[in-house]
Image 1 (cartoon, rainbow, N blue to C red):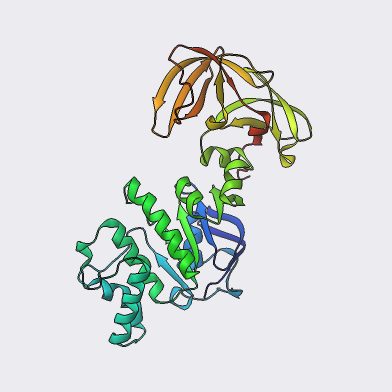
Image 2 (cartoon, rainbow, N blue to C red):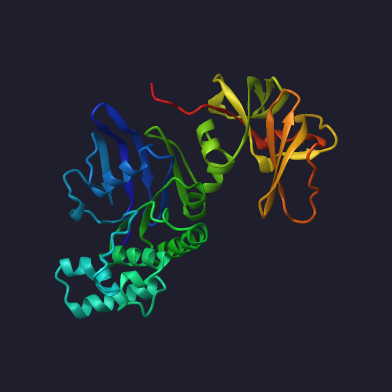
Length: 360
């Protein structure tokens, strides 16, 4: 069974510091939901409030529709996987997995059978009698997941569990975690500062900054339609221009800058606010000719080969560095350093966004 989680006007104060400020989110049963943000933004505090290790200063937390006020961690239908995993080095793997069941008085035969069933679920058959020291980093991650699943939680809470792994193993474990979550149907709440993890695994993502949830949406919408400058900058790279926006027509507004006049999408809730123009490097093209709009003459200063794509940096006549990404598909022309080109972008691919909604 899985359960939904509702946070209603949740705040958490540590003395005079507000770590979480008026969080409102409804997580569906069986959803893979990630809280994404930089260190100190309040995401781990939210996880600890859901698990019961911290009480909210204000607001209400419900799991499966039930108010969790006064419910200790061991009384909640949750399991928490810590960053350091906290496996027991002197116990064989099956006893690590079945530890929670032993605490509940389950007999040894049943515990062993359940541990072996979960080892098959996480693709570690035959590892029951191994010791923790005999496992790789990724295998230890799977054991920690199996141990958490052994007590049949309705909600799995994961606090940056992949941060200690190398890049290739992290990428592999993303797919493993997603597959395990889909097989079990348990609600997963995942905490991370890594945008790649959040976008690759999640059904929805809540982006946080300074204790506030800035945007909740599916990964594509978070990336393609950020609501403010913080979300745009934290989730992906951008070329950013400062200037003044004019009146929008059909959602497109003129934007005057020191580097030229452009046109870009202006969100309805950004009307009347100071905005900046954001355009991603992969939506920026380089050409020998000037476009009819949204075109900046640049001199190429650096070309970096990065495998699947090539990053090209150019500098405008006014001293603005503009970055473009070219796919390494064999068809694209890679410019030489010193080449004089025009950096161009489509108005529909550029956004005029307000700055982050900072605290008063």
